[in-house]
Amino acid sequence: MTNLKERTMTDADEMANNNGRRMLWVIVSGLGIMMTAGAVAGYLAAHEAQGGGALGTAGIVTLCVCAAIITGLAFAIWRNVSKMKASNEGLTRREKLNRNMIYGFLLVGGAIGLLPAFYDTSVGNSDTGPALIFADSPMPPVMALMLVFFWAVIMPIIAWFWHKRAIDEQEASAYREGGYYAAYAFLIGAPMWWILWRGGFAPEPDGVAIFMLFASIWTAVWLWKKYR
Amino acid sequence: MKNQLKVLRAMRSWSQADLGEHLDVSRQAVNAIETGKYDPSLPLAFKISRLFALPIEEIFDDEFEGAHND
Image (cartoon, rainbow over all chains, first blue to last red; front, side, top):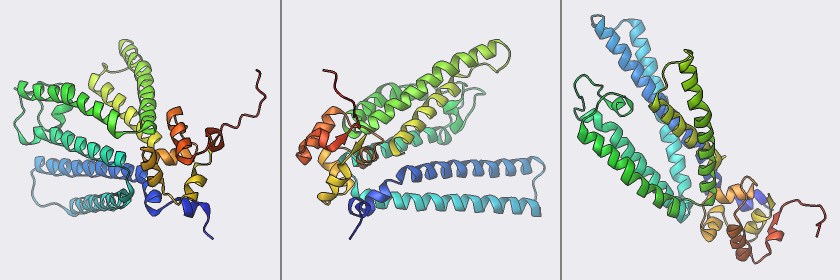
């Protein structure tokens, strides 16, 4: 005789219930790859600045360790994505729409993030590269208008459709709760930073950093409440 | 809130995805309700009640044991 859990949980259910943890692994592994690749690039740039030439034993060992870390993290991503794909067989209609919208949004976000890497986006001595999106330096007017159009016109349409059609009430509740945490973090944190700056205890408040913290807290609580 | 959703679902041999499809919600929502991590809205509770043809109070238990004042 099967027990209640066996009767009520299919393989797809069981796998889907671990998708939050898997998604977290994918995000952390992705960040790990970026940071390790950045460390390798920095190491090679420093080596080049010191005259270049053949790497010593320590340098080769360092690069091998970094390569092993990147390979391990890439394997972790592949494994977790494969399991997430397998659990998607039993997705409900809403879940499929939700998943497709999030994938689409990530693709568009990634394309926007990579835009400065492929086009000359420098203005005078301003920053270039992917970090331009989050920097304070000037950017080409056309690019600024494109980003504003996406953020102020396209984003609200996608958000409206997502709220109305893709998510259910449990996710809406998780999203609202994320908003409460983020709002309180902002209401407490931003004035605190401003006052500490005026008192000479902290650097000047950074609007982009505050926005990123606000969005990160909102997203983290939303995913935690959705998948916990 | 404690509830009989898992038992009722088992009686019909439905997966969480099957029940989610009937209720037009995700598997996460079904799982969160079953495990008591999320209390459904009144409209969703009525939908569940109609689906299983049972009164809401037979599916959900708010563990209230006090006497009514009225």
